[in-house]
Image 1 (spheres, one colour):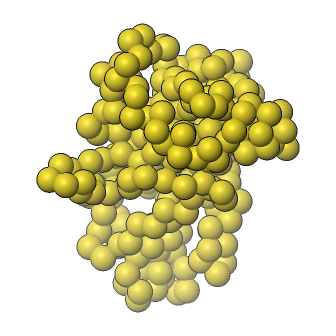
Image 2 (image 1 turned 90 degrees about the vertical axis):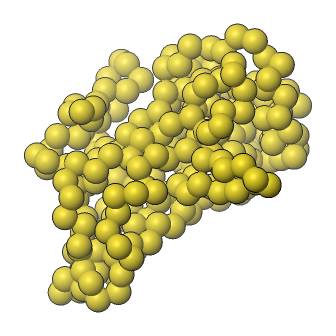
Length: 241
């Protein structure tokens, strides 16, 4: 059940030894094309950066990118959820720009992926995104054998950035980075990392994964590309400063 997956997050402190990040998958960010009407279009799985798209005679600026789990190792059989935060959207955006998150169909979340939020007197920067999964054979096990997904990539969420109406693309900064980072404060000292949850209900074993990055207005324009055909789980050109 979904509530069990979320509850599993709360008992991570009892788990002593995290798996090494990388071999068990990654949470990567890919550019979405922007349609002529301003909506988010197809995902470009070769691009981990994009310029702002200017629309309607310069009156609107738009940019979208999507977060996917790249399945590997412990996550190869599918996932029931993920926990992380996207660093880089709290500050550095032009005045008035909005940030909206669209989650994968059927997913629920606890927290906020892009903004700090309060719980009691504490400030949190994390989001726990889960699907209702009862076993590895459940079709809701994302990327699992019965999910109908054989790509090795699982859509988690999309982030849409939009300029104030009529103000066009005031986003002139180059090489603005957005990074997938651990939730803060971390759920458990054993998992100081972005992590995924296996579909092994009711345990939902967590495993560390690596967090990718996205460049808004990359300079030079082609500096951020991804080789999905690589034998490694992630090959990025020009992504890190």
